[in-house]
Image 1 (cartoon, one colour):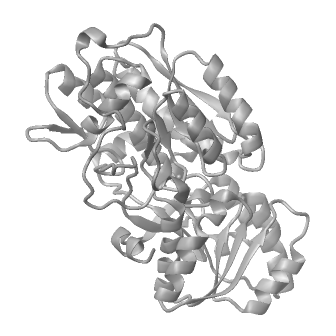
Image 2: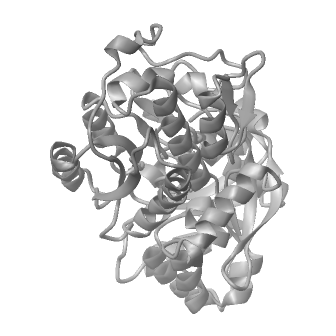
Image 3: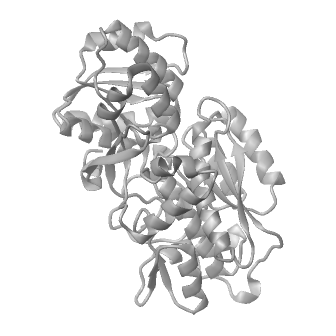
Amino acid sequence: MGSQRTWRVAALVGATALVAACGSSSPSSSSSVPTQSGNITAGVIAPFTGPAAQFGKLLSAPCFAATDLINKAGGILGKTISCSAIDDTGDPADAVPNVTRAIATTTNLDIAVGLESNTAATTVPLVNDAKIPIVTTNGLVAFTKNSYPYYWRLTPSDDANGAAFAVWAVQKGFKNVAVVFQNGIGSEGNLPGLTSAMPKLGGSLGLQLTIPADAASYSSEVARVINAHPDALIWSADPQTTATFMSEYKQLNNGSIPPMVTATDSLTPDFFGALKRVVGVTYVTQDVYLVGSSFSQTTAAFNTYKTALQNDSRTSAIADVLSAVGPPASAYDGINIMALAMVMAKSTVGSYYNQFVTKIISPKPGAVVVSNFADGVAALKAGKQIQYVGVIGPVVFNQYHNSAGEFAANIFNPDGSASRVGSISGTQVLGLL
């Protein structure tokens, strides 16, 4: 679900022309369509152990929702699809052997989901070289321009999310902010956009501080932030680090803590619970703003998505929170787009169906607009052209296979669910980079 480290939801593309994958020549004739036996696996490449393990849960949820609905609709070309956890631990040193092993041993690994920011620099090349189409939620600026034909990102880059932090902070009247980020690729990727945008908006960065993860104490770092007298903290860290830092801030500053602006990555039960325990529910629900990519919650696609999350016992407990966050929704849409591309291609082989991806989302005269897999399959079987418009709205991929949209700010409710409290123009964000 810009970002702390994963969802980190590619620069906005505006009205860029649609292009297919590198090698996007016209599809081959039906006589050369490759086939494979057996059912389909969607590999969720994310941390399932270690400090960032919460992201494995969050990235698995949209995969469960999408595959539940796909299988309910008869599967893909008669094949069922399931989600398989591939643990990258949030560490590139572990990610390389773990992902390499999964590629070699997983039967019909035809879609890869996740590939979050901490490890994407090493995992994307591995998966791309295996010719497996990728639905990624990473936000690394390095992928804003890339040459990977199997790479597809429906979320904004981290620098765009950093700029959105600045826009929201200034909208709330926070002109002098302290930036405190946990050391890590995902968190620190927000800095370029933040440092570019804040001065342009009339604000200032009173302090920029990088802290290690999960230290026993942050008293010296907390003292530096307190001495900077910030109006607000622009924050990015895992739940454990956040709880320790904020507990000491409260103790060392006579119970007072400035408001926090952080990423929608932190719209998780772990973050909510950890912070609530040390600073109380009032602060968490009134002074913590979570900024990230946004989408409309009034469409048919949204209702289908949220209901699928609610109906699966693996995701029902976090359905309300997840359904408010952009990156998981983009992963759900991405899986549906890949599945429909397989149906259109009449093949589940990634090296073949990848060239059909843009055909599923591009507007065409007379095309039937569909918001779910079942309707898309029905229209394709009837010989019609389709345009998939899902939870995050219309998707427009640029030549680097990046797409994104607008931003929003959310707050926690007392029960840990989320409510939207404002919107941020994607055009404005781009103009600040």
